Length: 447
Image (cartoon, rainbow, N blue to C red; front, top):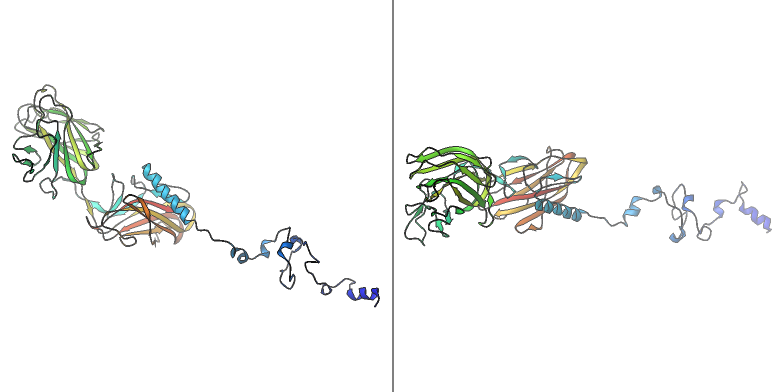
């Protein structure tokens, strides 16, 4: 066969070599630019043995590579650990700096320094001093009942004429260490063996009583104080409170006013409240005109405190009686007890998200003040992204403790009805005074 005939057999009707006459392999296309592949799909029938190392330049269009071809080789990334750590750090920073509630572009943090971040409460109470929320309500304002207290209060005095530096039980059968007297409170007056603790002449500064009420109480609004059976009149008291009998804080008296003045023995003139200060000072005019009598002043509008110990000092005597004993010790604080309720709830304020949210997370810190509270049973968290129209119940799981005695729990990626108005709700159940008391110390929302 001639070369011309051989060549002619390769040509088709259009005088070109037909594709069927050509077998393409790596030898024929060693460096095909991917940009030349503009349509169709490449399968084994087109490039049966094309080695990957032959694709050395150009790019493949997105439409040429399926998503599954890429995702099957990618390792999924879970950012929950990072998000939870950031939330924990935010709670710690807010606690350390005693910050009010705040939110960022993707989180909300509240440690209950105040009530700014709380929207609604149902049978729940935010403690002003310890900064927690618990199931309960404040009871009626009442004078502390020395006689009815199940655990008797004690009193300690210093720099007085006698009986210094000893704790005495109030209204009981007497301290076993003292056989000579009973320490009782008839009404609100203090007495030891029929007499009243008094300054000796010259000891008119920094003498004080400390009352140990044996439990933490919320004292507020009213308090009665005065002097008893003495010629000397007290012109200034100072009042402080403590949880541990170590660190004392001044009870702010700057906003108090006189509620009533009472006197016995016929000496009723001259007794009146004068002024109060934020450093705990209470200034009064002369209690009585002279002679032995009983006079005391009841004040109101004292701010709420939580305390176990209250320190009452007589820091100045009225002028003109420097040599008189200044007997005092009339002290009747008013309190508003927290009554634990078996159920309760509270919600956070509504947070506006920058875009629609369909899943949320949260970290809470809490304290077992009594008993052990079960997550998702005694403490239940709900989240909403549509301003509470629909709630999704979280399944909380425990995290390592936030601090000594402060526990922590979390939920991540909880599906919620989509929206931009975010909030949380915490429900209490099975609460009982002294046996199961949960205290929520902080909440960090994630969205």
